[in-house]
Length: 234
Image (cartoon, rainbow, N blue to C red):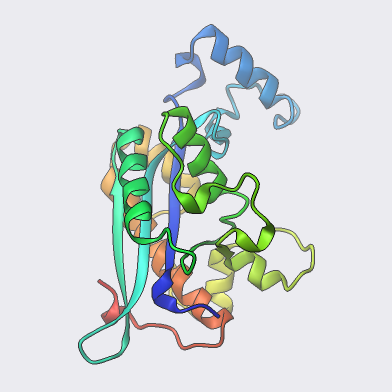
C-alpha cells in the first residue's frame, strides 16, 4: 500500500460533442452511424443512441475533472481535499489538469487512482489531450513502459482480485461498504442532459466531487483502512 498522500484520486464527467445527432456535420454523422451499428437495437437509429457518444473519446468531450487528495489535518487525522476543474472549454480543463499533475504528481512515488480508471478515465483524458495538442503528463505516458512502471490504481481492479467478472459500479461498492452514495444529486446517465438541456455545469461538478470522495473511501476500505467522515472533507 502506497502512502495516501502520494495518490491523486480522480473522476471525469463526459458528454456528447453536440446537443443532438442532427447538429453534427455530414462527415461526423457518417462516422457515428458506423459506430452506432454496434450499439443500436431493433428499430433504433443512430440518432436514438447518440447520447451514448459521451463514453467514446472520439465522439465525446470532458466537461469536468475532479481530483482529491488525502492529507493530515491540524489534529493529525486523515482528511480529504477536493477540487473540480470544469466548464465548457475542454482544452482549458485538460491544460489545468496537466499542469497540476506535472507539478505535484509526476514523481516515481506518485499514483493516479480512479474507479475503472484504467479502462475509462485515464485513456479518455490522454486521448482528449492528444486531440487538443496538449503534451501528456508523465503518469499518462505509457508507451514503452513496463507494467510495473505505470503508476495507475483502479478500485474496480482491486475489487476483482484477479478474476474476470463484469463491471462493478462505484455505487455498488459504496453500498457494500456502507459509504454514502454520491447519487443524491444526479447519476452518470443524467450528465449529458444536465449539460445540454439544463446548462448546469455546477451541478455536474458537485456530483463529480462527491464521486471522488466516495472513490477515496472505497479505496480506503479496499486497503483495510477506515473511511474518512464527511466533516473531514473540504
